[in-house]
Image 1 (cartoon, rainbow, N blue to C red):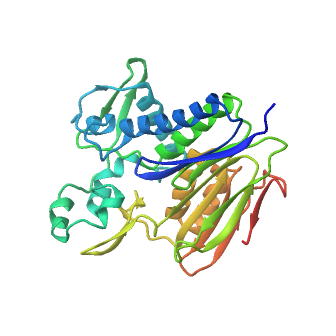
Image 2: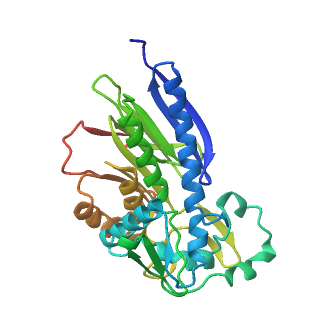
Length: 321
């Protein structure tokens, strides 16, 4: 049997940088795994991007309260979104797209910096103050958005896409690998594999590292109020909309990194803790995600490590906390 080599490819999809690293034998089968990765993320973008007028999500958001037949892929993610809406007591809410628009997140993030200042008033009129909801009709594979509802699935779909691809690659027998979509990542390995060491960036200082999460398998996701932020006529805004206020979160947490079993749960948990704040967020995480750790950076510069009681010491390590 040929020796396994860690091979890495990077590409752009879903408005973020995607990195796939796989332990493979040099073979056509290995090359096909990377082609599958690129095709999978391109497909997820075609379905879920709110910045593409031809996406399934954009069409759904124009349905104006009418029942719409949806793909099995959209149905799966909407069911998952509803699940995490319940788990987070409504802190994760795809129906806050009007509030995102009101805050100025009207174009993909890389275009925000080059946006003309005179566009603010026009773009804010596209927002609104009302949260929306939807109803799934499972047997009919149909969904109906409440009148006026527009949804954004960007807070869940990256983690979901990472998990789905990782599960498929594991099922193909790939012994070790990593799928990383803009910092929402999943890793796996076997008994002979070294731990994956995931650096946690300091959002206040580009290139600086806050900590390192070392794990053999599992997921890591980070959410920050500084990463996707922009300047407006009303001051600095960011993408973490607190559904309780309809405005960008103002908790004491600047950044939260969650290490858990799946990328989608880690992604949702990191956002939720950021919005709830260090005290309430820690209590929620302990109850809702007992198998997850969280590393927090607060506004006053304090670093807090919240360790799961489920994992024994040494199973998942943090360096530099």
